[in-house]
Each structure stands twice: as C-alpha cells, then as structure tokens.
Length: 214
Image 1 (cartoon, rainbow, N blue to C red):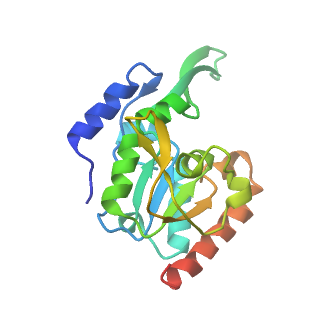
Image 2: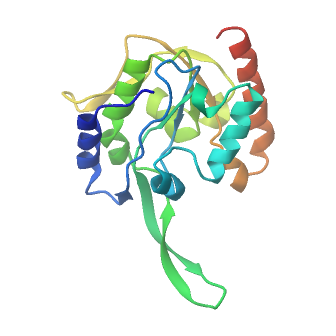
Image 3: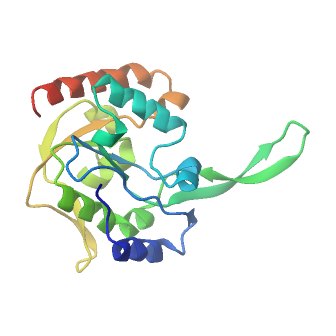
C-alpha cells in the first residue's frame, strides 16, 4: 500500500490549521493501482473512519467500481483536500429543539493550495495509468478552473495537469501528459437524481477503456 510521508502530511495539516476544517484522511490504495480516483474532500464519515469514501457517497462509488470489475483494493483513492471543510448550520430535532452542527462545504482555493503538494506527490510517485476525477473540484484542480464536469464527463483526455509551484506561488502545467477521465461525484445523484444515468454511462465507457488496456 502506498502512503505519503509523515512529514508531508504534517506540513499539510499545518498549512490548513487556520481554516475551518477538521481531521486528516490519508489516501488509500496500492502502489500500482488500476486507476486513481481524485475527489473533493472528506466528509464527516471519512474523518471518523480515516478512510476515504466510506459514507453514503462511498457506497455509491463502490457500486460504480464493481460495475467495471474493480474493487476498492484495486484503486488509489485521494482528493484535492485531505481535511474536512465545514461550516456551521442548524438542524431541527423531532422534539422541536434546534441544534447547531457542522455541515460539509466545498473547499476554498486557499485550502486546495494548502494541500496541493500532497496530491502532486501522490501522482508523481504512483504515476497512475488513468486518473478519474469525481466532480468539479477534482477536475478543476488538475485541469483548471474553467473545466466543467457537465461538459467533459465521459471524455478521455490526454493532457498535462496542474501542480503547485511553491517558489512561484502559482499552479503550473506538468511537462508530462496524463490520461484524465472526468465523471460526476458519487454524491451528486442524491441531490440531482437525473445525473445518475449520465454517471452510470460514464462508468460503462470507462469499462470499455479499461478493457482496451487504456
């Protein structure tokens, strides 16, 4: 199993400690995975278990993986940000009481930059044969802010990707090209059920690509 160094993880935690985030979830998977999955950020379930995609969205992702003949053990799962970004919200209990609770939110650009060296290192070390981005955050982290999953889902791209240049303080394109396959985040089907048909079709396209050796 591959794991980034403790030093890099500690640096990532330090760089994000002033942000409204909690926990730290390590990437998970073998050194030579069939594919690498890049999501957004962990949620509450992931922070509790320390394992990426273990909540409701994780179950949806496992179904998609199974549909192409893969299991969790075959893939490397990571995300643009490794700590859970949250905001405070309220929830009404059945007894009428209103309580405050942490609610998941999308990571900010500052948070994505803070953890950029972690994802950069994982990609550089693992050299995945194919990167599947899950949702807009993972896609935009690698391709650029203008990329949209609604336009690019299900399309195999051969392209340089972005890495964080600490010295220049900006994202730069890699000299190497990578195979990127964007699709929807597994959680998207819960708040937009119409996405499911497109998401499932993407995974069937991916199955064909894997069967062809690409």
